[in-house]
Amino acid sequence: MLDTKPKFQSFEDYLAYDDNSGKWYELFNGELVERPPESGINVQIAIFLVIQFSQFLDYRQIRGQGLELEVRGEPRNRYPDFTIIREEHINLLAKRNTIRLFMPPPLLVVEIVSPGELQRHRDYIAKRIQYEDCGIREYWIIDPEAQTILILELQGKTYVEVGEFSADNKIISPQFPSLDLSASQLFEIKS
Image: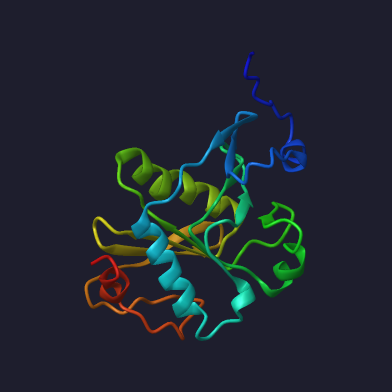
């Protein structure tokens, strides 16, 4: 029996598809590419961020892994490791946890870099370009290997570096000044 993979002509066709597997896919050139599970460290860091942000934000605005973003280019969708959504997204995402291009962008997107040169390029370059294009105001790149957090802020239509934080440097978030966290606290959970 031939294993035929579905081919999608549009993002709407992709959204209407459900193989009932519970798997996450990126849509690349009209075809589904299964996303592998995240590393344990990446999941731990994302959960730690959920706990930190829930101290001063409505928990319904905090999304860990599983939120899907429609983006331009290839692939046509991304699954950030951590996202802060707008209040108006809460009802919009009740049926499907997907932010479409016609919706307002999330407030913050965080990617936690997985080991490997391809993953570094994806998070530092490819996703940066796509998130910038979507108008996402703040983008963090957390690099467990280098133990750094790069924070970018959208100014006009371009990301500008707010800072790269490591060791005991307090993380400075332009949108979330209430966050009281240092880089070393974030990476302590790795031990």
